Length: 203
Image 1 (cartoon, rainbow, N blue to C red):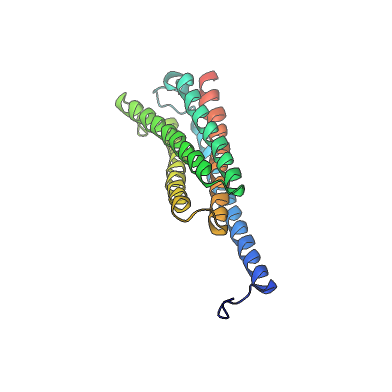
Image 2: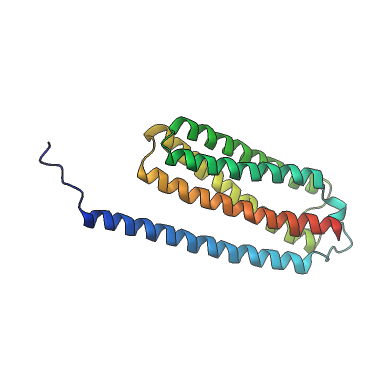
């Protein structure tokens, strides 16, 4: 036995647990602040959604089959993210990497479709400058897309760390926070689908 190796004491374990709890608590505070941000954006959109300034309404520009494909992609990515978390807890590195890669591909596909939708609207002359309705739409959905972009970068970093260093306590904690973040974005999208797209088409 190496005499230079210090044993892990109960105090060390308690300190590590306290740090983990503080990190988790801080992350929940961040998610709650993001909830406030999105609540404000949703409220703004609801107030302005009928202010089309003579331009198109949601019924004129939204394609529900297209949005449904986006929704299926994001819901599936949330499922595969949860599977990756379970596989990490089971110490199955290779399978967890595959699940994370699939989650990344699904998330990137969703983001690509969202950017393509924005591009087509701008090409058709329906940019955020045309009306208050479109300004609030681009701001709300674009903010969600920005969060998806951040989540994809985060996911790529976690996948690289998993590939290089394997499964350890630090990676498990980071993956847990990433999973919370990704599921949160999934829930926000369900509200966007219902309030922005579905209500917009049915109104």
